[in-house]
Length: 290
Image 1 (cartoon, helix red, strand yellow):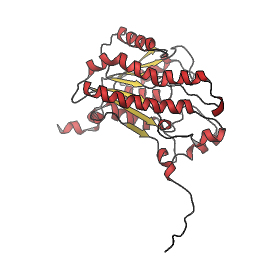
Image 2: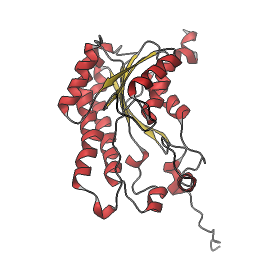
Image 3: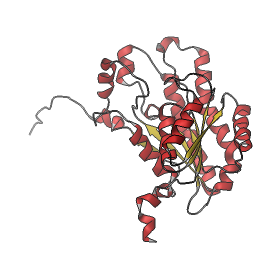
């Protein structure tokens, strides 16, 4: 029994089957790496397996790269999650690869939008909310039978992890957006909505042996930016550094393993204290009257 307290057992995801949408780049790839490195069987889904992504590699190459890293394996699945039917097709494709259960579903795919506040196109709202909110619900529902089948309800439930954002908790814009005069309001509000969807799903699914939680990253760069923009962004982070691969890995391994098996319906904020920033001021102190 004491061996259960070992980190290697408490945080183990060995041999678990995971599917990560948007798993070929950015935070999705960070999550995939964490799972594969720790022995999970991981499927990364993306809009186009052969399309050139931001880091100039296609999804098959990413899957091969992660498999070579060990100790688990990684496979790729093409998925364009733009409708309920597309979500159901992804489940069918997953099953056609020989899978009849799923331990971990990571709803990570999202689309970003930024523009002038007074000039946000109508179709931006539709596209952002379709992927960032609606398809999170429909994909979770489509995978529900496979998640229930994998669940060891009392001790090791199946997991649904939704990648949210601190922008879904704090109102307004980050300093870097203010500096360039743009707004990401459709994205910000979509993340607030998907946080709510996730917590409501937790109410319904936790009794069925499926934990649902939200990973809430802070500023975690996935593309290179100018030094000036980086400096502005760092001004939002009390810890004084950006988030990275190890920060995301530690959080998802907790949520996906025995360590987090009694945790459902939470927003796990990993942001270096960014959401505390509004409490910090540089207002000059004044003497109080005696």
